[in-house]
Image (cartoon, rainbow, N blue to C red; front, top):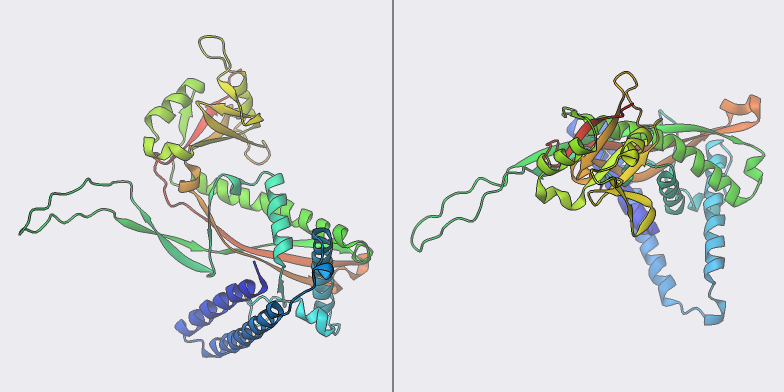
Length: 384
């Protein structure tokens, strides 16, 4: 995402927030947001002019940076952002170059929760990559990016009629499908407090960035997975699955064949172990290797995704493991701003020689389709 695109996304959030205040007759805050919107709009126009001027200047081939140099420059810029934000939030005056790195967050226009700044795109990308390493349920769920804190989108039902007859000179039959149901979201503010050693701030750029990325991603994946798990099980009656044959039958009978194109099977370590030990009537393993990914396994040709017992705990009392199967991507979706806010407080950690930084994301999980035709939630018996 370019600088202009980041600022335009932020402008959309400001305008939506201003409209919310105006709808609530809160003219004072609406005026503040309108002022911020105008300032950011002016900044966007200036950035466009600079980009146009920069594009018109021909750079000699010999002076163009190599990819390695560009990467190093970007890393330096990202680390400089963190140091500039910490410096700004401690009340220290910034240089003009440092101030240019900061893009304010407007989620709290009155500053009651402290001033914050949007993390650069490269750091947000690193966090997303780290989330995948920590096995986020985002990998198997759908995704919708938004610029508003609240809203809705239409989801059509699963009842579709066929074509109708048309005859010249007569009215056609009115068809009621598709019927759309609004799916609402309301982004939740989820944050993490991270202690940064004041010694670490003086170390290498990569160490500083990687430390913040790893700490936030580990906390975020725990929270997001809990939100997704709750939504996966909402409005569902758990199917009792005595073993792999019951699972196979449910896939064949309960799921709509039209929804099978993106089917995945999600379970924990216990559930995977039960399936991995199971043999069919010919003595063959019911799980087969994925020829494209040797470490992955398939059941009936559908990929099996394994999450930790800590993330998806088994029911030890009833000796069953959670299992979700079907087109999860259509049934459950994450919604977020694709932005992460960064703020800090040096005073909070002065006794331990640390700076406390706060990273905040805005996220919700929706359930566009709760029907068993789309996906099922079951409890797989673990056996002896």
